[in-house]
Image (cartoon, rainbow, N blue to C red; front, top):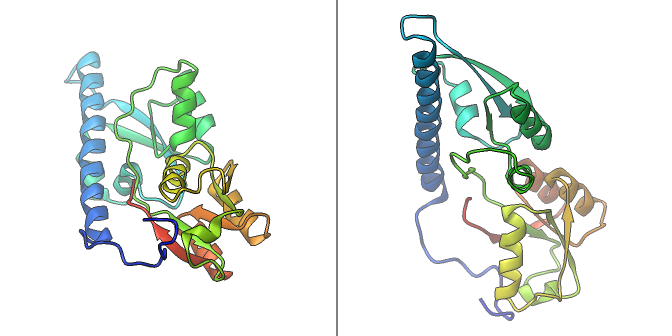
Amino acid sequence: MGTSANIQTPAPKRTPLYKRKRRRIYAAITAVVAVIAAVAIWLAVGTGSSGPLPSFTISLSQGSVATGGSIIVSDAALQKTIPAHIHWIPFTAGVTAVAEMKGGSIQSISGVGNPPTVGAIANGTGIDVVMAQEFDSDELLVPASITTASQLAGKSVGVLVGSSEDYELEGWLKLQHLTGSVKVVGLSSESSVAAAYLAHAIDAAYVYGNYATSVQAKGGRFCWPTASR
């Protein structure tokens, strides 16, 4: 799409978003159950198969986005397929959850997010990324006065710093020949991005879910969809 293209131009037809989400949810459930079962079996073998079921502690994100872990927690039938006693504990800060796993108090994290994961890898924390996948659809929300990509020149866009959305936005700006013309404001959370937009501290917001809803409720207009990550 060129700089003069209207950003409301319909995208080419492709598989509906809800179908893609459903497929990814099934894949995530399968992967998470398989990993948990494998670890549980490994623990059982280590302690003797005739003994009691092993215990396994998983830290679960309290965010609004569905993850393999949150789906399992919401489905009693799925939980019964796991040959272990799973202790689910919530977390609200990904960095803290990674530190707890490094310290040995938990064995796995579900839905930790990109920045904590990248930070953990950078500082040498031994982790295995089982599935780098979430089920969301970020939206670039702008004021009603912006109707074309070129009108973002000289404007500021808020995004979660270090996230996949951050890279997506930078890539899109490059395709629109807007690199350097648009100020990308990296913030520590999507809630901060939404709050900054509502406070008129930034001109546009790249957010998803409840954060996008809060921006749209105050006049933010959807202008650019991305593929679910």
